[in-house]
Amino acid sequence: MLNQIGRYVVSFMLIHNDYAWRHHGGPRPTLTALQAMVGSSRRQTAGFVSALKAGRFVTAVADREDGRVKCLQASPALVTEIGRSGRLFVAAMDAVARRDPGRAARLDDPDRLGELVHGAAAHVLRHGTLIAPFTRVLHFASRDCGYPLLTALIGAHYAATVPGAPAALPLKLRGLAERLNVSRAHIGNLLGEAEAAGWIRIADSRLTALDPTLLTEFEDWAAGQMLFYDDLAAAILAEPKPDAATPRYACAS
Image (cartoon, rainbow, N blue to C red; front, side, top):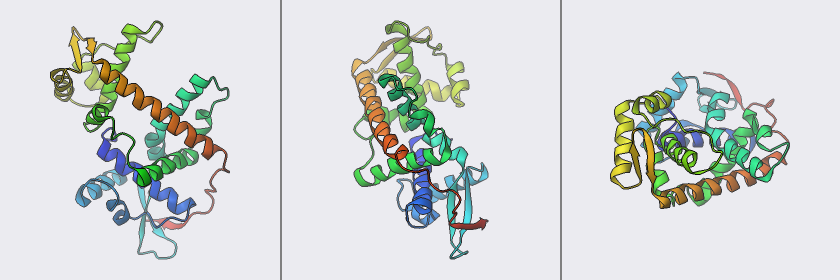
């Protein structure tokens, strides 16, 4: 449900608004406020928020000062899922820098992870998205489960070219579809589009060619994310943990 950039951005900004309100003096995190700051239509945003509520990823709660105002509060499960990629980029920096203990382990907490998402989203609101310059990474991320599929392709390339890299899973439509929880036809379409564009070539369920400029683009994207989230994590971990004992909500509605 969250592995598509439009839906991811709605969740990303919802968490930002929630944490900005609870811990940073921001405005109330209402649906109207969220609709004004994401790229999807108001109707699409409302529909997706309803799906998040149904899945218990989001709760609408009454503002303590005005019970008529409903604020959107992200569940720990949503924060954990949306913050997962940022935390993993920090873990990658821990490995590169050989930090022990690393920073990523200290982010394995919904409150700190929420602050990581809040900080990243605040940067995006000020400066624009970080993914926009990486057009092919964005192309994959714009499709359902396209980004995880791209990482599987990059992983297959590393498995074939980097000594000691983990073995890659076979790039079979059935296996990929089951792993990513989408249809075989959808995976086939995504791979077909990438092959038609000359980005990849697959034979006998193996990656036989990867456009080196796509590899460079992905590695530049990943390196930038590692640096960005690592700097953000360092700043967050230097601050006291947010006080979760002072809610600005009255009760669940």
